[in-house]
Image (cartoon, rainbow, N blue to C red; front, side, top):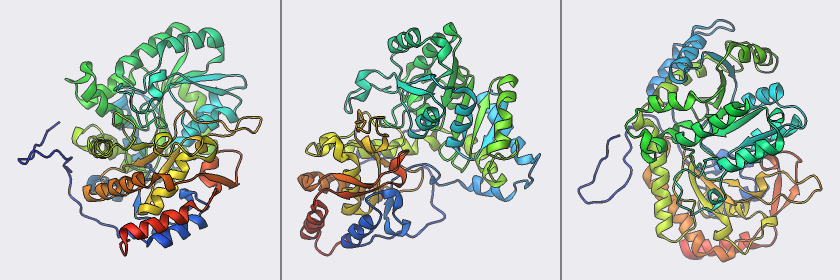
Length: 482
């Protein structure tokens, strides 16, 4: 990886691409932002895109594609069955992961659905370093449950561990002994861990987990949706990976797993997904679920144009200059906020910059959804759509009580090659203003609450008139500025 120094001594990330297509943005006045937020039930998923200035909700399906990806979509072989484009994608999977068998699906959660239907039965337990919302939901719907086995320090936002996504190996051994290997369909590894700040797992830890699983005859499964960021951190932070190419690291990672699935909306920079399987027996056991729930075996719910773009995107994932841009922008944002004393997850991870809402607004209780409240406040302050990763993203306990999350995070996602550094500086400025006025922020409560994945479509309202006070303070400080 090239390191570029500025003569002035200033250290900022430098984009290794140029912009050829632009899309107009809109920044409504602060009063209009409050109105739009209320109409959306304080659920930023329900906002209209024209009401948003910087969309930092997710990096899923919103990354900028390269010129070569767009060109490949024009040349795709449009066929329901037997498309040349599918076989090109299959060949790329075999090349970079050395997994011979591949099943396409329309996105990552479709892969989770097929895997859970095939392998999870009532009473099963799935150990993982940390859960993702839809992953957990699919396992629970099929009668299983999830246990999370990261170390206790991994849940401390400002701890310095470079690999907070690592399994606590003693917890894993003890869990297998307590549960019994026969009740564990697979151990799921997430690289990196989405809900605790996009934190990576090390290659050394993956290999240790594999050895434990092999000892007990348990299958290993990798969610590779955020793998490109994880590869970047392995190369930078892990001694055994520093002299390896990204492709060599990827092959070493892949060699530990029986099944690898991914959302190409992240891993591949296009809209789709897939399940990679090491043996024909596994492929045979799952192929009928693809034709039943997704589509034929050579498209799986994707358009051939998306498959063509994924093939190129996976190849570009091997380029350090391509995969470094997101983590470098995130690191810049984390460092700038940290300099101002604003609580963020450290060290900087992948996916986005994460604010620690528990420390940002400690006066808001967990039952009033502090991360969700801070997301609402950030939208009012700057037209910035972020994502709540805390109690609101959990489902209630069976008795109806809240399952309070271990961490209350606001994720400011960093879609790849989308934002300029001045836009990131704008987000930093508005977060800084919120920090200075944090005592004005209050909590939220549900007005419409779905039973499953409530954070997607539920509606909330502020518990007081704190949003009106925030708008008034904005006008006092920024006057006629948007």
